[in-house]
Amino acid sequence: SQKIEQNSEALNIQEGKTATLTCNYTNYSPAYLQWYRQDPGRGPVFLLLIRENEKEKRKERLKVTFDTTLKQSLFHITASQPADSATYLCALESSNTGKLIFGQGTTLQVKP
Amino acid sequence: DAGVTQSPTHLIKTRGQQVTLRCSPKSGHDTVSWYQQALGQGPQFIFQYYEEEERQRGNFPDRFSGHQFPNYSSELNVNALLLGDSALYLCASHEGPVYEQYFGPGTRLTVT
Image (cartoon, rainbow over all chains, first blue to last red):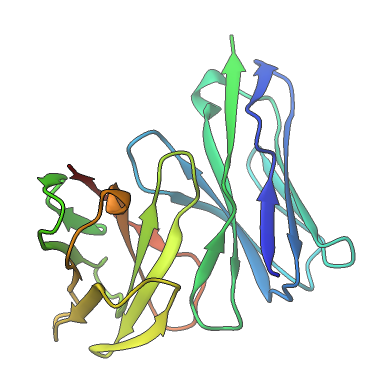
């Protein structure tokens, strides 16, 4: 069956360190993968999109990698700040349909 | 430029009742998707509307129905509410080829 899995446990790190979040999927062949940030009680906010033919994408302190052989994406936040504390969701698009399939999200807590 | 808006913000209904949630997409967007997000979970795709027609549907019963109007705004209707329908309902919009989706703030539905 198709699955998208993210670290279910919350990730607690110290301010200034690099946070690394993992997204694994099975039985999908996505054309691209997206990462979203969600704050409590709010809608997800788009962060980055990476295509299947791209190995790495960067935006300011954010970096995403996409390994279609391992069926895994890694999301990095460098020089993390308390304001980065949120839940981060990865999402795959199913067969060019516009139907996004989300992981369950990983909660990141950055401590000062 | 207004982003995606949803109404109402919160709603409390009794089991067996019917509810209608509303969404206005971001300016220039012609496609609207609806998601259900239970506490601690990622959003789950309900359906998508384009050119006033349901284009894609997730694994939700027929109690969930929708509509898109000529101005691209959309409604989500849920009949015969169950306690398990309590969730955050998110609307997202995008235009043309599917890349990032823009989410509204959501409607928190509580069924008692």
